[in-house]
Structure formats: C-alpha cells, structure tokens
Image 1 (cartoon, rainbow, N blue to C red):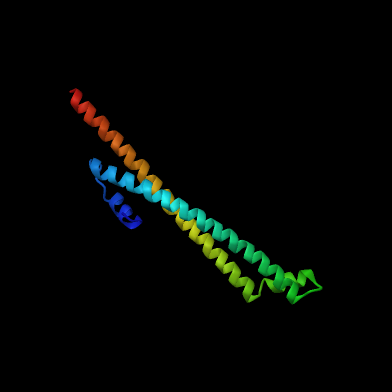
Image 2: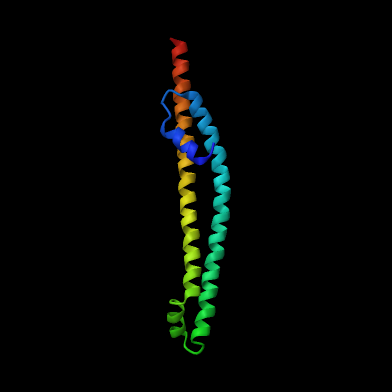
Length: 130
C-alpha cells in the first residue's frame, strides 16, 4: 500500500475490522521506516541548501560592495542569485515539514490500529470466558 491508500483505508476503517487494522498497522510501520529514511535525506539536502544560501550571500556581498560590509549585505539580500538560493532552501524546508506530517500520520495509524487490535483481543478473550 502507498501513503494515499493507507490514509484512505484508515479513514474508512470500521472499529470491528481486526484484519484490516492488522494490515494497516503493518503497512503503516513499514512505510514509516521508508519515510523516516527519506526525511533524513531531505533534511540533509535542506542543510546543503542553507550552506549554499550563506555562501552565495557572502560571495555576492563581497562582489557588490567589496569595501562596505553593510552595503554589500543589504545589496546581496536583493540579489537574484541569493534569492534563488533562499527559495531552494525554503522549498527543502517545506519538503521536510510535509514528510514529517506524513510520518506523524503513519505513527497515528500504527498506534490507533494497535489499540484497536488490543481492544479486539480483549473482547475475544472476555467472550470466551463467558
């Protein structure tokens, strides 16, 4: 199952569907591991973009006003190369936030399905005792 299928199945999961809960739980935990790995890669990419922003801004500041630090800083903040580097960094931060939200949702699916299975197991044992 992919993320969209897990999301759809979770939102329509009846409280008494133990088999569905088991399948969802296993699929969610498997996909969560993959997403956490992807998240680490995206965070690394974001860090690289941040370094690029700092480097580009410092380089352009020096090029635009070699003898005046404050003026170079001000001018570099308006420079298209610096702005593009910042856009790339912001896109990477957005990707991090979106992936984190997906990981949190998969955690919720896992724990909700685990709780549903525990309730179902408890009910089965109490029905057998009666």
